[in-house]
Every structure is written in structure tokens, then in C-alpha cells.
Length: 102
Image (tube, rainbow, N blue to C red; front, side, top):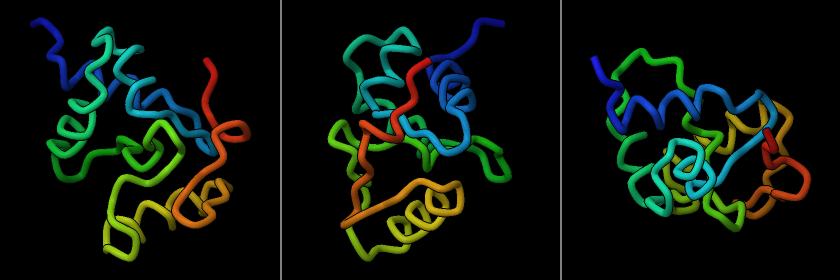
């Protein structure tokens, strides 16, 4: 069976190491999807319940969490990143420090 576009994205996200982050665009490139960064968020939104994919390690290209600040999802993502040692300041992560460079 051929791997779907979503499965390729999930595989890339699974390979982001603990304590590191990647941008939506970086994930798209690594999944062979060129400049389809917006699709990455949709694919992560389709994750089946009970999955082990670290969706919270994917951020906007400026290091910002994509969810509205103060929302439940924003707080969940921030907490999970901080649990892995990633510093989040004003909803943003310093990519120069934490970006995954495979």
C-alpha cells in the first residue's frame, strides 16, 4: 500500500527529537510536499486518537505557536514543549536555539 500524504507528514513529525521543534514549512519540505506548509496543520488535525505523534513540536516559521494565545490548545502545546525543555516566551520559541536540523 502506498504511503499517503498525511502518513508522510506524520513520519517526519515522529522523527523530530525531544526538545527540538520544526516549522510547518520544514515538515512540508521533508515530507516531499514542497511549499505546502498550510497542509501540514490540516494533516496534524486528522491524527487518530491515542496516537504517539508529537504534533506540538511543529510551529510557525517565526517560532510562534499557531493556536490563539490563551486557548486550551495553545496552553497544551506550550506545556508539552516546556516539559521537554523548550523555552516558550510570549507564545514563541527561539528557532535559533531549538530548531531541529537533521
